[in-house]
Length: 138
Image (cartoon, rainbow, N blue to C red; front, top):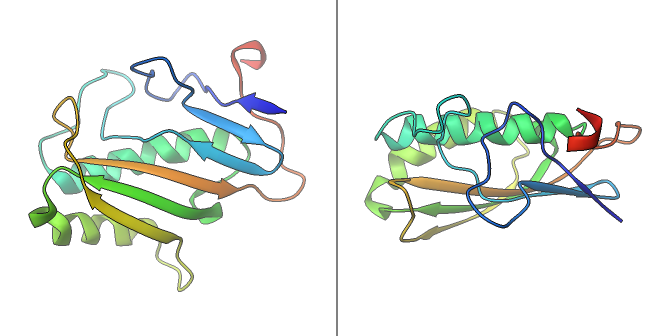
């Protein structure tokens, strides 16, 4: 059975999809961009800033499911301009300072709404973590 992950402090979704699903101990998140959850606007035009904000958004969703960035096992990254890979990669590396990092695929994509980066993750929450934050449990 799937539980919807929709904390009140994450950016609103922009279409007919779930921001995150909890299935057993596995967490599947929709792609996150560098949008400020309070304003709905991109934090800047800079890929490093957008990457950092995307991970703050990811962290909010993971926290709502009883997990953290340390629990991410896989990242799928879309970059609007692969020439910005080095700048993105420097910001990305700050998110995972330990020796064991998630697997990652990075591709070039035509992204919507001025996004320079979009990150989709799969995580596994620790044993005994609480259920997901859903509209009914807010």
